[in-house]
Image (cartoon, rainbow, N blue to C red):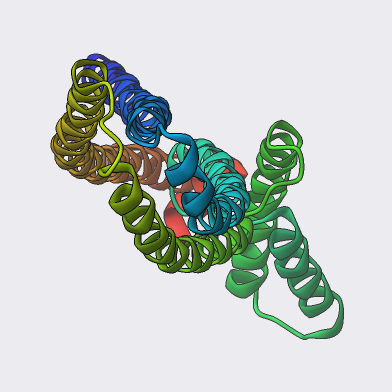
Length: 298
């Protein structure tokens, strides 16, 4: 039985490690997309610069170009704000995953505060209520169990730095809020990008009248297109990685369910053995331990 539990723990750790690697790969892909887009815009700007040669045409193009640059500056600001919110959501997501991993080891977790409340209620009941001997034994057995549970909960909450399961919902809401803000910035940015593109088309219209350095401009354009293709490839890879992430999460859920079933089976066996021993000692008139009382009457 111990070997099976160890195997499950090893398997759980292996899946967690795979999941972390997949998540790291997703983050790396997003970073690659950001870097590649940055290069794409540099190639695009270089291409546009080459196409915009010519003093007279340049004077005419200054108005739409200035408007485009103003829009691009606002787009850059919105992009920075969006990325900050995306990074904030990512950081919170990592923290959420970490806490979920911690609480995954604590099936049926009950907080120290709740355990203390239950103990005080039993203590009050014992002191203020007239009970039978069997009821008194049940109360004492439950108080003993709660004492052990409070000791364990104290160690758990110290290890988690005061984090509670309820914090998961709060973290999830913070993640959603950050994502919503990022989405708002992104939608505003997209609208401005479309407007900037219209200004850009005016710039191109003037530039096409110039006689640009075709070879260099074409090379810049090809590099721009290659960057966009790389972005599309990274997006496809992200989708594949997300599918793998979903599969790993499903494996974790299955392992947790099996571990819980195994633990409950072990507990039943232990309680049955305690019960047999308790009945034997009871018949012999021997004093029973609290665990034996709990097994006999609980």
